[in-house]
Image (tube, rainbow, N blue to C red):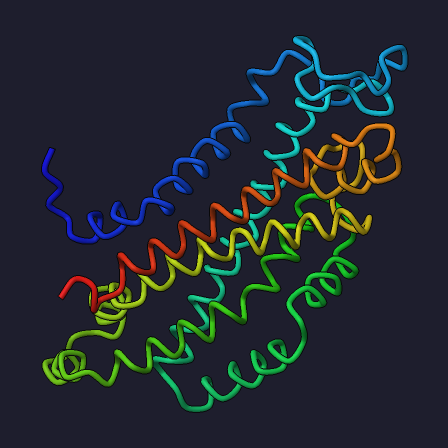
Length: 279
């Protein structure tokens, strides 16, 4: 089958990105469909089967309380990946809104928003997430919100810089001269110019957001046990890592694979969506 899209051809030419994309799709499927296909309860304890080895019944063995590790990894993936998607979506939504308003209208509005974002940019993103979680309290939804708040400055600054560059172009000035409304200019001329960068950054930030989610849960201020989440699984697994190495290896490898896949897919999208690559 002949592929007509040059952007798709460029992406497919990066074999490592294609492999990563397949891996990412499989991980997403396992995370969101897997919990409905597993036969074990992720929180069901069986102290007669503590630290069970790999078997046909328990693919990754059982932890210190006899819970099936494979099932907990699958359910934990749903929580971790879901919160990463939720958090980055919050960052994109608010960052896009603030960036469009600040970059397009400028003036006092731009100055106020920019100074506030400069203040947030001066604080490490992970520290913003910790402060947000301290104000909101622990829990899954609050963890996603905290991670999302920490990503708003990045998307806002990126959107603002792109909008400023596009709004000074000749075709946007021509639209203003003939009386095209601001909302139509934003939707039809500015948004198409910034969405490739948004798509690339969204993909790359998924891995960072998952790392932040896992780190917050690892520290005990994110998703609380017994809810399985890759960071909390790492935290509980380290206590018995000598007796049950898979307790820390399995969630660690899952986090590593997800971050690696999102990074490689993001690199492939950046090459494919680069305007210079399709000229």
